[in-house]
Amino acid sequence: EHENSYKQQQPSPRYNGRDVAIVLAHSFGAKTLLGSATPSIESFSNAKNNKYGYIELKERYSNTGFPEIVTVDLKEERKHKRLKEEFSELLLEEIGKVLERKKQIIIFQNRRGYTPLWMCNDCSWTAQCNHCNVNLTYHKKTHQLICHYCNTHYVPESRCRACGSNNVRMLGLGTEKIEETLELFFPNAKTGRMDLDTMRSKNAYRKIIDDFENGHIDILIGTQMVTKGLDFSNVSLVAIPSADSILHYPEFRAHEKAFQMFTQVTGRAGRKHEAGKVIIQTNDVKHPVLEFIKAHDFEHFYTRELIERKKFFYPPYSRLIYIELSHVHEQTVEQASQELAQTLKTKLQKRLLGPEKPLINKINNKFLMCMTIKLEKTNSFNDMKHFIAQSIDDFRMFSHFKAVRIIVDVDPL
Figure: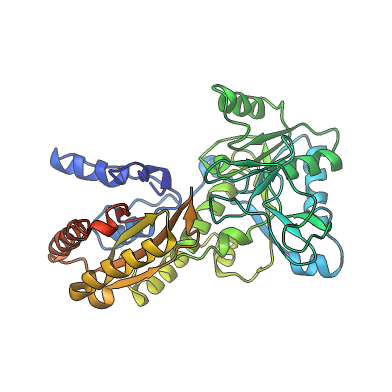
């Protein structure tokens, strides 16, 4: 139920498959069953307000206990020089123990490639895409820097473009580097990698799942693909070598998504015969999301999130409409967004946030501006939608803004 992939993003219509199923069932007088160990905040709120029925499963299948969850403080590990290629001594020790017992391991890292940064050690310049405002990811197998937004490939430069220094290094951790590191530390272990780079062929996904299930792979390394409800009976250890980028992503759903993703991946450990173990490496061991995950405290996490959402008027206490404008000229899209915002504010006033540059404000040679509208969940919602649609139609009549592309997303994720 909580899966982001149910939301259609490109092209339009931008609908949520879950919501469509609910509306369709309602029109036929049927029931809809939503299932998840980590439901969305909106669905949990609906259940608590008796809009949905709520059935809670308090025991794991086959009565196996919840896995033990251990957090490792990366700051302390660095301070005492206990890190080996971004792996703590504890994590490497636990991997060794699990392999000795002929059990299996899942390593979750939601970044494909070798390293996410190609960086100058002298002036902090980073290699960026010429067409997008994003850092390039180094892929060692092909020895290329690749933009994960427009898929442009570049030859890595050994000299810094900004200061001319030769002191250029790779920084960060991707699935490709994790696989290489584990093959170095555990040469007798059989590793497999599940990410977009290795799953391109028709039968690759089915093959790696079968190989892991049949014991032909000891350590499975993967992106969020490995969190998708897979059931492996022999997995004893799950590890998250770098949790911070997910925990601290700058958007209001960051804690919800982190809790869902980490809970789902930790649920792969010890599913049948014995309780497994989970090791999470982070620079912020006191982060509230990790505290709730360690305590397996679903209820209090959601209660805390609802309090925060109510305080700042985010869903489920409001509905959002996201508007994105794009154009090949930055000045044009900035002027267009200001013009449209001025019109919308005549009625929306403080409900309109922005316009502002999004986190990534250039993709495929087009500059972006965005604004977010928070609306009350009242009968006036449809009237407001009509006003917004009419304002955008009127805006498109301006000849100097005709080339500006506008995307409207209701209930964005």
